[in-house]
Image (cartoon, rainbow, N blue to C red; front, side, top):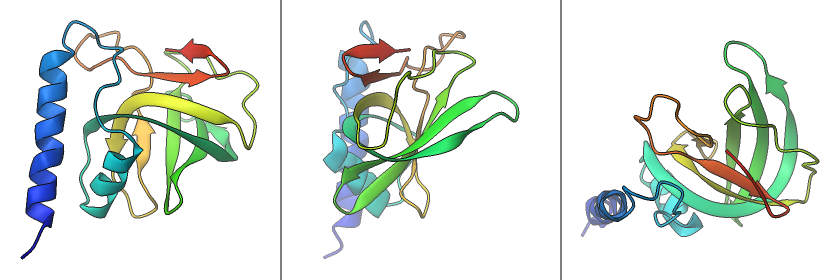
Length: 142
């Protein structure tokens, strides 16, 4: 029996229910802990709000084409890393971030073969997308 459709259904159900219960509190990280991100990666699922944390394993140069993004790679599981692309035109840069630091996040997961991307880690000025954030050393960046 193929369990992938059932797992995909459960992930989507968690996302839907999470949105219902967090409409008034967009900062609440109630959907998708790191294990759900791993399941989403295994099933090629994307466009889901996720929360989690991990260890920074590599700092990358900023992407300065178009909207500017601070970029770094986070290990969220022994088998999975994700790229975090944090929009520094809409939110402050995470100051003092170093390899080995722990960072927490709430944003949107996009699948790719390398593990995926976490983005929308900032407030949405258009108020059409859930607000996201990063947290490092007790400070929240949104």
